[in-house]
Every structure is written in C-alpha cells, then in structure tokens.
Image (cartoon, rainbow, N blue to C red):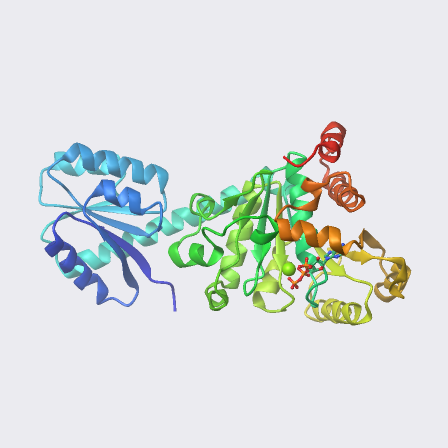
Length: 403
Ligand SMILES: Nc1ncnc2c1ncn2[C@@H]1O[C@H](COP(=O)(O)OP(=O)(O)OP(=O)(O)O)[C@@H](O)[C@H]1O
Ligand SMILES: [Mg+2]
C-alpha cells in the first residue's frame, strides 16, 4: 500500500481542528500527524516532523500568518501549505498565495473538497519534488563523490573499525565525509566516535514522509573531526522501519551532499544489503586471515555473481594481518583470483583502547603504524578518485596530536 499523506493541522480553534481531523481520518491514505495553534507553532513543529501538507487556518493577525507561510515554504519546500479562511475577498487569496500557499479554501468547506484538495496539492508537489531531486542528483558533483561500503558475512572482522577510521582520516584531511551506520540491529558507530545518538535513521524514516537534503541534515550528528554520522536505530526492533527504498534515497541524497559516504554494514545479507551494494561505487570486502571468514566471503561473492551483480567494484581488504595466522595474503589471492587492495596490521590492545575511549585511533595517535596504514588507504582512494591528496594535509594529519 502507498504511504499515507501526512498532514499537520494549524488552527487556533480546537473545535475546527477536531472537525478537520475527523474528516481526514476517514481516509486510509491520509494521516494527521500533529496539531498546533498557528503558523509560528507549525514552524517549530516542522523542525521535528516533515508532513506532506500543512492545513493552516488564518488568524486575526494576517501579517504573522504571511510571515510564517513564507518561512515554511522557503525552508520546507516539500510541505504544501493549504490556507483555510473565511475571507472571500480576492485580496486575501492573492496575499496568501504570494506567500507560498498552494491552495486557498473558503470555510466552511465540504468534506469532499477538503479531501480532494489535500490529494491534489500533495500529488502536484510530489511530481515537482521528484523532478527536482532527479535533476539535482544528475549534477556534476555527484559524479565526483563516492559511496563506499564495508561488508563481510562474518561478524567481528573489523568492518566498523576500518570504516570509522577511514572516515575520520578523510575528515582530518579536509574531505567532507558522512558515515551511515546500516548495522540496523546492533550498530555501534556512535560508540566508536564517542557520540550519543540523539537521532537515528529510524527516527528519520518514521518522521519524514519525503526524505530530502534538508530533512536528512537534521538527523545527522556531528563529530569534532568534521565528519557526520547517521546513527543506527537504538532499539533492535526499529530495524524493520528501514526499507530498501529508504536506504537508496538516503545514500543518493548523501552522495550529493558529501565527498565520501561511508556505509558500515551488518553481516546479514538481506534486501537492504543488496540495495547498498547497488548504490555503492566501491565495496570493500573485509577479511581476516581465517578460513571460516574467507569461506563465507567467497560464498557472498558467488551469490552476488549468481544474482547478476557486477563484482568488479569489490575490493579485498585484510584486517588484523599478522605473520603467525597460519594463512597469508597470497592464499587469499589464490582463492579470489584478485589482488588484495589493502591490509591493516593486527594490534588488539591499540584498537580496543581506541574503541573504549570513543576516539578513532587515526585521530588519537596518527603516527602509529596502524594509523599510517589507514592514511595511506584513504590517500590511495583519493588518487583513484582523481582528487589529488594534499601532501601538506597528510603530513599535518599524521603528526598532529588528537584535536
Ligand atoms: N586491526 C586490528 N587489530 C586488532 N584488533 C582489531 C583490529 N580491527 C578490529 N579489531 C578488533 O576486532 C573487534 C571487532 O571489530 P569491529 O567491531 O570493527 O568488527 P565488525 O566487523 O564491525 O563486527 P560486527 O560484524 O559485529 O559489526 C574489535 O573489538 C576490535 O578491537
Ligand atoms: Mg560492525
């Protein structure tokens, strides 16, 4: 079933709000998501929820209404404003429409006219929004930015460690980076960064009917290094809220906003995994030198091929590389018939300490052997992307202490 049209009611009379809610609630494809007294309160509410339609009754103070509508239509172009008024004079209609309202209804309004107007303005605005989004996504910038996902069908191999430290290294080198924690059931990227998840991807999809850059920005949290994070849900059952369509739109919009979009994943292969894989420009398959890990990752690669996915975007990454593992990187080469793109050494207490302190090791100790390996990983990718790494930036990042 299509998602319901979300409507916010703004009217100073509780009686009228009740009447409007009663009429709209009879329609299964319309949902009233909130009630406020007037335009100013509607504006406040919009910082938390993003309905499709705002029904706003005119107040005795017309200039307040006009100001609120102007601000709402400017800041939230995906919210269609419908004015409800008892004034039949053209002058009023023109003033409210000029402020940005999409329609103007005389009160009292019949149930049919109210419902059909909500449908009409929603459909018109949605078409416009889709056109604008496609146009924006096609702009030149998108082709330069990259979506990188870190995957493995075995847990605990270091996907999060590598993803977070690579993202922090890029941030330190002055790139704009966002991390998306798509380990929807047990994501911990915020812990690696010492951040509290004020808002999560579950809140985003629950509260925003149309996800756009403005809405998305409000759900990102900022790290002192400059990177942004979209947190995984706090409660495991909330993972059900996030669909492949959500994953696709979130990643596509973020790709438009950042140089690098880093996607951390869970070991589970499901529809969200395949959507992430489709959207990603590069997929880093993370191994440790352990036969069970390598067997599971080989099966994943075979599955992708059987399903008709291009697998040339897969790059092999070895984490916890150590001489005494009993397996060597050359063994991996034999199994996958492809070079290992990059490897990170093993240093359990160093990595574990950085996780427990909530400070990525590339920021905490940029001169450490593992940190240098991460910096060389990101600069190698910069070079492939065609963006020249700044040598001065690299040296500064490597030899400055934690910020
Ligand atoms: N290079 C490394 N050297 C030593 N220990 C490491 C290294 N990388 C990761 N670890 C350790 O491995 C553990 C698991 O790492 P991490 O959480 O990054 O794995 P993951 O693949 O994201 O796991 P999950 O699938 O559960 O999300 C961490 O506790 C960390 O200390
Ligand atoms: Mg992880």
